[in-house]
Length: 324
Ligand code: PBG
Image (tube, rainbow, N blue to C red; front, side):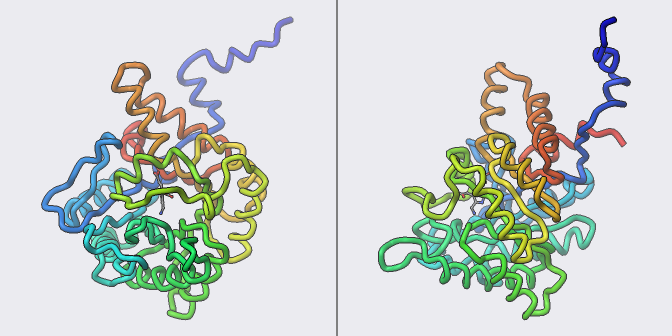
């Protein structure tokens, strides 16, 4: 007798019935860039289909995300170059582009869509690092962490449901939780970029936010060689009060993601980063790969590995695959 697993692959209906992993729009989060001083949305050449939004087009995008049934949007602010400084102060201002964007998005969607804020200084510093530099030029952990705490409170005040520290400073989640609670924002959640690797796959993002970085982030983001360390970082963030943990990048870190998901008591997210998305777009443009199928497969694999939430630039596109 031959045991025949192929029986369960015999029709689309059968395959749908037995699918172990399903990706639903409600678990997808769309990253959204909002730039200061733009008259109209500006395409990002290295991220096909993704633009820098104006405050007006951001509101339309938030409504689209809501109508598509997405889980949320993650906002990134892109300041005018002249507004960058050594401490990223524009990122903390109530009238800074990110906080204005958060207010506009929140006013547009209320509580119908989860509005998340990137809580990091790299878009706002003139040197492009995620924190402030000490006298020797190293990113100063505790000084940066204190700024994140102030930034998180400003983002909560602007209307963020979720703040998302992505700077990889030690202790940042605890510092932000303490500051949010002290300011009365006990219901604002923290999505911790818990295991964030110093990755070459962030390339297109740096164009998307007009990054000023020269050099790298290897003294604060993790070494791609380290799997155990991802679990350690996630456990620390969970102990510090993170409401969600995130692994980033996603597709090349499925081992780390599976480990973190197995150990975590909170929801686990993964970020399909700009390079992961752009490579699929580029290959598809050459006719080498089926764009939609490759994106869907990549996101399915990320969910299969253990993410219950996926940040992806393809969130709206993939939600079109979902019927009812
Ligand atoms: C830093 C940040 C980065 C990304 C999200 N937040 C870039 C970096 O660490 O250099 C990358 C996202 C992507 O590549 O899509 N605040």
